Length: 491
Image (cartoon, rainbow, N blue to C red; front, side, top):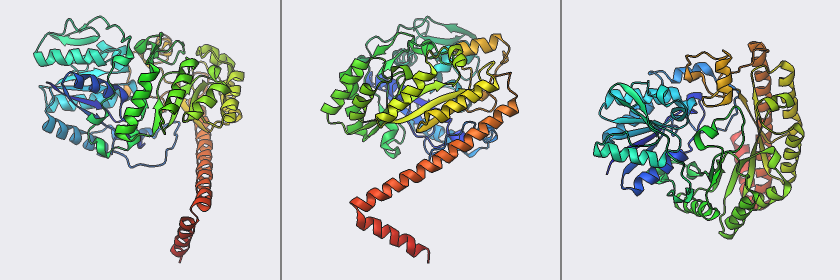
């Protein structure tokens, strides 16, 4: 039996955002390892670093604060390094796995360096999107010993087995590793065809799991793979364009397991496009209702697959919000990014969601290469016309593995030597357009931020009013007592 520590580095906390969701990917890996009698701890690096606060959607982060939180002197780093040191001293793992999307690269490297310096005998493994796309570059970092590519569950299990037995790594598909000072890259592993064969995520392996809110474990992937070709997304490099589905029975069983054992009641289906197969979604909703699951959930869907009938079925099974990527309000930009939707489809989709009485969130981006001021205005106009309940505006970021990244690199828009700490979609250092002055772009962003903040305050006051009216009608005694306490506090 090997002891394995799995780490999800903090990133939201660096921006002073509270976030406590546990990584589904790490929990899935932990489930596979535990089935083979290995012992795991998942360290959720975000947990407990920032006090819980109302969510605020910032288009760009406070970059100076973000950078200062990466410093050795920051309170966030001191807490993170001390927690990791305490866990390793108590648990004594032989392998540490660190998940690495590009946005978390800087903190992942910082953690790896710290562990390698303090505990040089531990094998440190990088996994996730960034090492999948750039395995050889990732292993140029001296502290990483192995990179796991694509799906990690069975690759990581085989790797841990080999490390425990002190075997060579040449025969393990799906990894890159260091040998005699050189980086060796093995062929990719075949994709997992039967997703039902995976055990339930081992949420209980989470460090201080009892202190986490129940909904920290409310994430579920019911499929892997996306058939679409959006140039800003690298999903196909991780999962492929062919979509593989869990069975409906397995999905509902996992929902029941997480709800019953961890008391989660709010879930996020994290599939790239949850509604690819409407017949499957319909069956899933019916089984959720038959199982008597009292849960609420949200999912991502496309504007061109949004219809009233499927939304009503989803709502009847607990769906309270759908998130739809629109990305731009300009038809030319939509064609350029290969979104394959029209402005009319976007407008109809949000009107249909509103008719179905489900909340909506709209994703948008600004700062595409060659995007003009007029095209940015089109996006802002569409945001106003859609009137979604929530809007998530991002700065265009050329993540590795995307066509956007390749185009930006070949066009000289980004340098060949890159500082990955700058690469995330709320970074003021992003934005690729050369046709709009950078200060003008920032002015637009500030104006949008003011509008988002006003909308959030308005939504908060509206929700408070609804709760008070509900309390007045159903619990008038409690309502009156609270009013008297407020009055008494004034004198």
